[in-house]
Image (cartoon, rainbow, N blue to C red):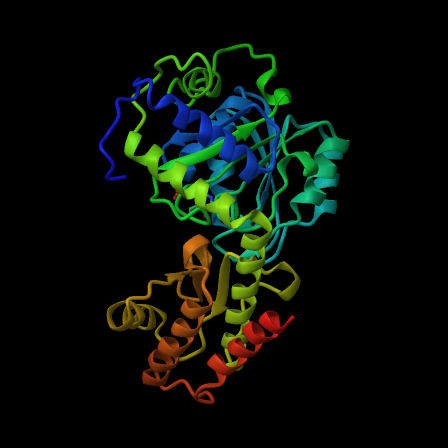
Length: 364
Ligand code: PMP
């Protein structure tokens, strides 16, 4: 990011735009032509995908079992869509059978879901959602903000039509860019009106990112440098190695937390590799523990959102921060913080359990 700036129309920047798209195709595992980062955070990616697929009155079914899927429903409603929400309790995945029933009752243009629901730490069965969307002739829109580059999401193989992410999570670039990809089904959608958002019109944006590199807005070039490098590092490590690293570190942390006597929030088969959620034990001040971790150990974990506020902690193990040594460091620091809250556990048990998981994998 501190490289000397290039102008957004400088011919020397153009190869980097093209490389960024090519790298994104690899990371999204897609042959889609349209793949580039929107200038903005994950929510801009969300809004772009919604306003480019929906016109006022179009019906969308949103699978909601957490804060970010709720946001999808809210953005779709503001875009004038006819929104139907299919819910599951927070901490569960939405049941594919419920989605099938809802889509079977009345046709919808789009089915939308989060892949990793960051508010609950749940990994949703997007592949099953895709089969249902296909059966009912709906486009599948997926939020991969907390998964792209850390959790397997083969866009083409699973039949995802449009997908967005954020630069700051499993790609570990600074916040500020939202990778998107869309297939030809989306790009050829007949429209009665132009896309309501000029800034987020994917067709116009692709005129800049793709050929003829026509001016649309002044892209934040330092952020292009950043995401280009983050994607390069992602591809250099290799997607299978990255997915395995995220899965291993999350299971090591989960084992360590359970060994301390804590309860993981997301149920075992649905645990996301990129965010580990854990219940705050009775009698422990959740905000004080987070504050202690941050001020005494320089570790930031998150609290719960919405109805889970005060009830869970959320530990992001994403991209560069998904490291075995950070898992062990957190468990050590957490022991100190929990001890000062009067929570009783077997000292060293968390580290030992996590180390066993990590050692078993390096022996395998
Ligand atoms: N979707 C999910 C699943 C997220 O985790 C987030 C951010 N935590 C967003 C959307 C919104 O992204 P941003 O905060 O970058 O706008």
